[in-house]
Length: 160
Ligand code: 4NP
Image 1 (cartoon, rainbow, N blue to C red):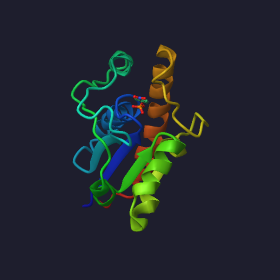
Image 2: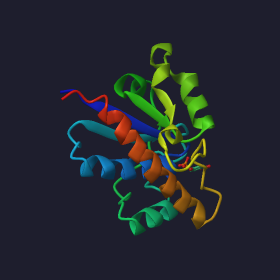
Image 3: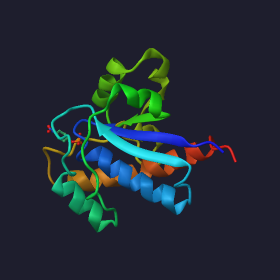
Image 4: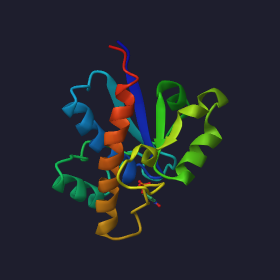
């Protein structure tokens, strides 16, 4: 029996990556794989360390049954590249920031979340921070789509 650890990464760790974390935790729990798949999130920036997710992200998530309130912002650390099997970035800037600090032997762990989407062909999860409420709905739509695909991909790597 193996386990797989994934960390979702955005800029602030208060909008997109906590949303992805909550959506994916829900998928994992539904699949009864909570003991096999470890889920976390982090930001590349340090502005929101220790803060709860953005109120707008919390509100949008709550309407769909996801609770972001226990989550707190943290910044990615060098140790995360060894600890996690996948570091899943929301956009190209996040992926580039990760690549810059990632030890060479772990670079293939860095992926984009939307690679796993099957319905939405957008390359990235767009930053909703400076926009309106519709941006937060779009983030959740994209996370729900991609997290379904991510779970399917990870199932193939779980050894029975
Ligand atoms: P996130 O959104 O990267 O999805 O958490 C942002 C949060 C904060 C800021 C930018 C994006 N900011 O500029 O503080």
